[in-house]
Length: 350
Image 1 (cartoon, rainbow, N blue to C red):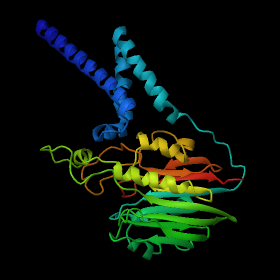
Image 2 (image 1 turned 90 degrees about the horizontal axis):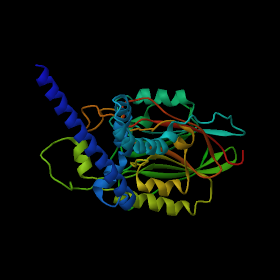
Image 3 (image 1 turned 30 degrees about the vertical axis):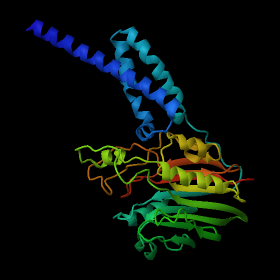
C-alpha cells in the first residue's frame, strides 16, 4: 500500500510540475505577444481584457513553492509576482481622503438593463446617493413615466432610439443649457448624448455614452459548445467600438468647455485603446477608487441564466483637466448585469 501511495504521490508531483511549466510558458508567451501585438488580433484582444486573471495562480503557487522549499521554482515565479505587484498593486493603494477646497459635483452612471425588474430599487438607490447628475443607459420608456424620483431632478434629457430600451437618460439638478443626440454612423443603438450644464454659473459639457459591444456578426471559430460567454468570446471584434472612441477623442479636441464623460464604454481598462483615452483625460475610479473596479457581468440579466463572476470594468466616469476626483465607488447589484458607479469631483477653478 505504501508503494502505491508513493507512486501516486510522484505521479501527482510530476503532473503538478508539468502544469506549472505550461503555466509559465503561457505567461511568457502572453506577455511577449501583448507587448508585440497589443490588440492586433481578435483572440489576443479578448485575452487582454482578462490580464489580471492570468496572474491569480501566482498568488497561490509562489507561497506553495516556498512552503515546499522548492527555491528553484519560487525563483522562477518571483519575477511574475513582482510584475503583477507593479502592474496591479497600485489599484489597491489607499487614496487620499483630502477634503474639497471648493465646489463639488456628484455624478452617477448606471447601465440599468432594459428588462430590469428592480427599477423602483434603482430609483431608491439614486436618491440615496444624493447625486447631482445621473446618467443612465438602456432605460426602458416606462421609467421616465414613473414618479419614483419626484422633483429631485428638475432637468432631464431623454434619448429614445428605434430599439425601445436602448435609450439614454440624463437627470440633473443643474440647468441644461444645451442638449443634443450624437449620431455616430447612423447606428440606432446604442445611444449617445452631449449636454452642457450650468454648474453654479460655469458651463460644463457632459457626455452620456453607451458604446458598441466589441462583437462581430459571426464567430471566428465554430465550436460545438453552447455557452453565452464563450460565444461572445468567439465573436470578439473591437474595431467598431474603437472607431467610436477615436471619433469621441477627435470631438473632444474641439470641446470648448470642461467636460465629464460617463457611461458604459463596453471596454476593459486592460485593453490598448484604454491608454488612448487615459492620455487625454482622467479616469475617476483610477484616481480616487480602490481595487479592480470590475462592473460586469454583475447578475443574471439577458443571456446569463447562470451567474458569472465579475470579470471586466466597462463603466467609467472620465473628466478633463481641472476637475479632481475625490471619491469613486461602485454601487450594489440592482437587477442589471452592470454595477453602478458614483464619483465626487471637485470643480475646475475651485
